[in-house]
Length: 150
Image (cartoon, rainbow, N blue to C red; front, side, top):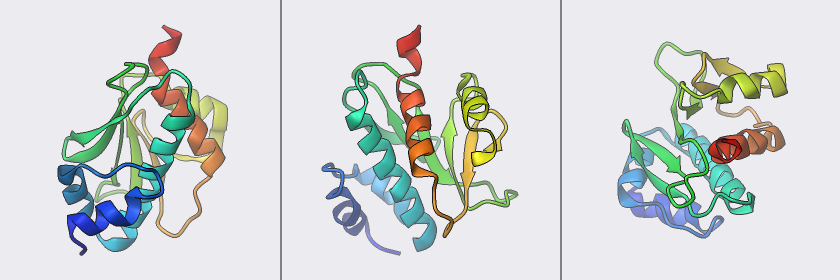
């Protein structure tokens, strides 16, 4: 395992923001392959947020002990979390959404079997399998702008 400062320094330069220490500590609790994959999701979330009109600054914090990304400045979207998949899952890691939203249904309708889904709450991934980055960016953008349509 690496220490928090190495996570912060190693992965923040590409997105121009450091990882809050409590979030870095959560990343450090995971094995290196899973941590690297989750940091890739983090970078994708933050870069998509920076490119998406109306989102504003993202707050990175822990929710349920997992790295979470909130649109607390603009209140434009729904929280996104990233973490290892559950112990009973056949997948390594996941991007979680608030299950009371229509996000997973909307994503499923738009992208079908491009993704593997866990109910109404998560997209599931495996370490070593390339992410469908363009489609995943659209999913992140949908979550980060979820409340703009209201």
